[in-house]
Image 1 (cartoon, rainbow, N blue to C red):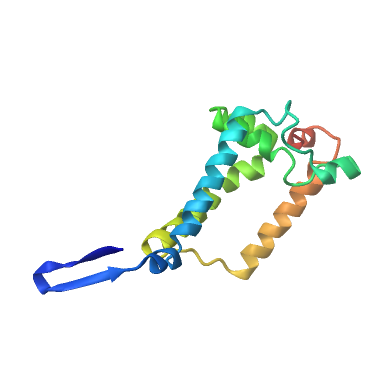
Image 2 (cartoon, rainbow, N blue to C red; image 1 turned 90 degrees about the vertical axis):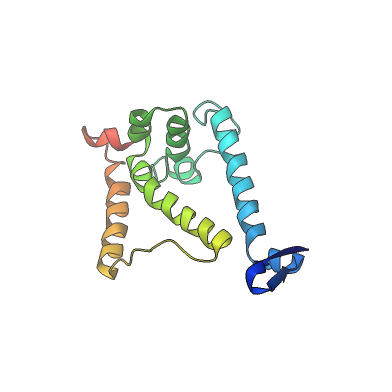
Length: 153
């Protein structure tokens, strides 16, 4: 049992173990541990030459690249300090990382402090435009014509 309070007002609040668990700390710690494990494996093994990571099922079935093809290799390159090589493998994923990191930080703050970081509300038309951009990226990276071949991992 932990106690926390303000002695000058004579107020002492007792926090039980079950309240600690219900505050979301366990979820935050589990996610942080899982993320650290995945990053450690990704740093240690190169997805381009290791059999630790499975191949893309869409590419294995069709021979075409999906929007996520090259993401693991790009993350591996980023973790080793090679941002230009990462951009060459999957520019869409690399450009979306700041948004993903902010969303994960917001969830971490929510789990630890109890409130979210300031959010951004996007109009529905922007979300549809993003979906269109992802589909366009998917199509363009499979056209075997230069300069579109540079979009393939």
